[in-house]
Length: 502
Image 1 (tube, rainbow, N blue to C red):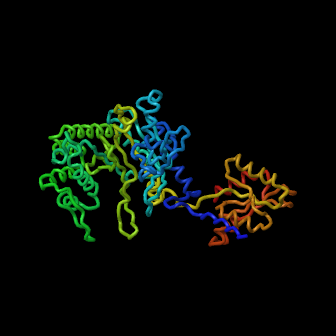
Image 2: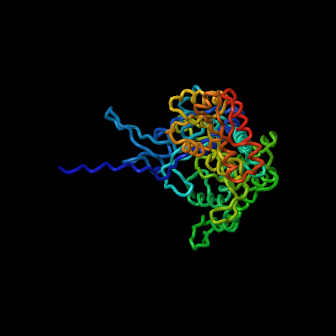
Image 3: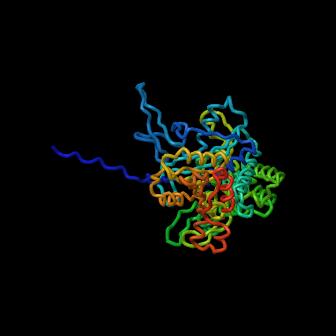
């Protein structure tokens, strides 16, 4: 009889494009998101948690093909007992599409306007790369049902407050604001947008928008080349341009150079550039209103500024768009200095909910890149600078006295001190201390039979012990021994004192 082949063991590895988050990563992210949530709460926003799974129809951006939804989402088809085909379902790819569904589904129950914030993982079925994962966290805040650009100004102010609350200095960031209506107005004046036929010159407009978005990287000469015939980079690769004439390109370049130290001058220049377009003039007026509202609240151009170079890539933006950029310098992987860059963005999207209701529902919002902002805080030394502190570890000297050890842990926990009982094999005491070191434990509690009979416990200061092992002086050792014997009744007070000294 042939032997059965042994079943292959599963590989102990994360799927490609995914990762695991351990203790410090999780606690630092939670602390940052809790701080942001406090800011949003003060501004009157309510939390919302939606399902990780939506119908592909509700997501709206992707449709099912023969076998599976189009690339971009993780999707599958439900089984059906009714004889009809089951629904296509997918993991959400952002937090905005679920909000649009909620706003339509519960429109008779929610207040108008509805302010909400949401935080959680999203999934995208895209090719992973360095720093690009298929699962990542987003932190969104949106207002649905407010047509006034006062809602956009509120979002920008709240974003500014959130960045400062988590530890980004005022000198290290800028929230930049533009308006898609102004962009469309300039495109119309430049002759690459026909309001009567929006599909006309669509490819050329796409090239123009991408060129504007690359101003910081390519400079004015590089952008001007992309507006015209095209541009050849240092490697010899050629990028086809929009094919604009010199006169058309000059209008677009003038639009980008409209940024001035004063918002009033910027608006005046934009009004001049978009003067031949009704939608463009409307966009300039909205920017002026946003600037006035922010100025009245104390948000000057050093925090939130009008900047015509802000484009934002998503096609559903219909009005103001904004981006938070961190301006401090870091070194890239090649050792070159560069600005840290964008950590948040958003804008107005008045047509997204319309897919469900058939009626236009105004909405505006912002999304913070959680991992990007965490990386910035680490770069600035706001988090991740110290050694994470683990729990106090109660060692086990006698298996039959586990109840006593758990009673010690309970006393410490009731006093707000993190504590745990060692649950491994207690036979080798050295292994218990090694475990405590691996847990980054500040203190080990020891009580053998002789200490129990005397009503005593031993506290071992593991932090000081490590310092002594490295370079503590004899005077430091004498002034504060790394191990002390105390009364069992003083356990909480003495542990707290040791933690405060550490």
